[in-house]
Image (cartoon, rainbow, N blue to C red; front, side):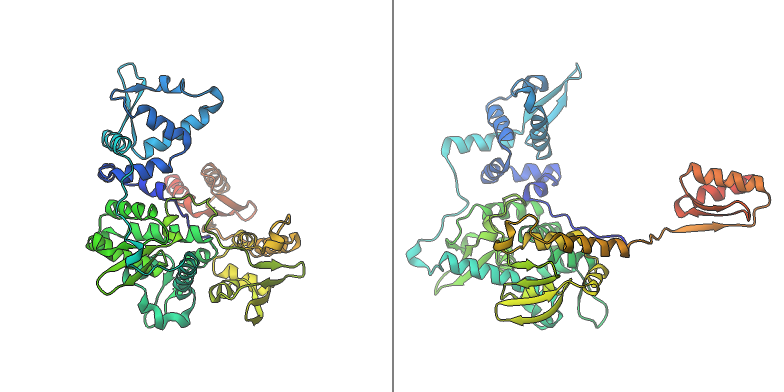
Length: 450
């Protein structure tokens, strides 16, 4: 069975995938230009600042002189990133030499930033006018809301509570993560099970990416949505921002993000406000940033017993996807990794590498410093069970027999070999099996022989 893989991109990958017209529209916002500049690698930032007050084309050969020879590979990476984001544009002169120019809209807005200073998208409300939760309470709220969001995805007994999630978020779920038949509760797809084993940052990026990708269907411009999300990523965690400063589309987006725990909504007597959590302020960070990842909780023993020190219902549900639950205490989940439980995981589309990666990423601090953090006999056995299950490979093919002569049979075999499509041949009884992709070529060859 082919494995389904989910690729979670970071925010700048999403920005670079926008059409040229939408990217140029995005750069009309000076704050967005600042946010994108912050996300660039140091060498790419250096090139932008060096080109900031140059209004003419700069030769590629001249730019190569800006770095030492040992840094040439990083030079190419930096230039490629700037071209993807359309911060730089590339042209070829009459001598067929490459020339670069900085995006004029991006350039003007950054010049304004240097002259007038940083401009925040909106100012926080005075602290004495609103009730603000502590940072610890806000982090606990974000984690609980995110876990509840995922628990509704994995647990069918939460279906009656799914009305608390907006239709936009449910649409994100159903696109690849959930499947539903008539009069049946939604069920996780292979991609859905794999999604649950991702770390929090990767899960968040997948949801945000899908939310942006279907924004056009909801009548929302994807460039406007990305612009607003980038703005939110530079708000201050724990501060209150007035909802009256948002337009209608932004208010709907804020309500959707509150379902995920990215912001917390509060209502006062006269005004309403939202409070960003760490999840939303980390949006502009890279997927490799581990600052928002939770502390590990799993201990795996050499006898395949697994101890999870957690009170989370979600984590209990995730562990049951590939382990057999033995008993559960208020803050301890005891389970065992068995052949049957691992085979059940394989049936759902979960791979051995994903299971092992999940156990390593969530290793308890007491064992996380060990090398390896998961016993080798356990990881080896999980991989052996996967290889044992995948010993037989199914290949679509066509069977040929009853050839009129040996010459025609041998010529047909040669034709199949030329197309790399001969799977099996029996020269005595003049039979052969050909791959499906080579079938049309062999059949046409035999027709010409007639």
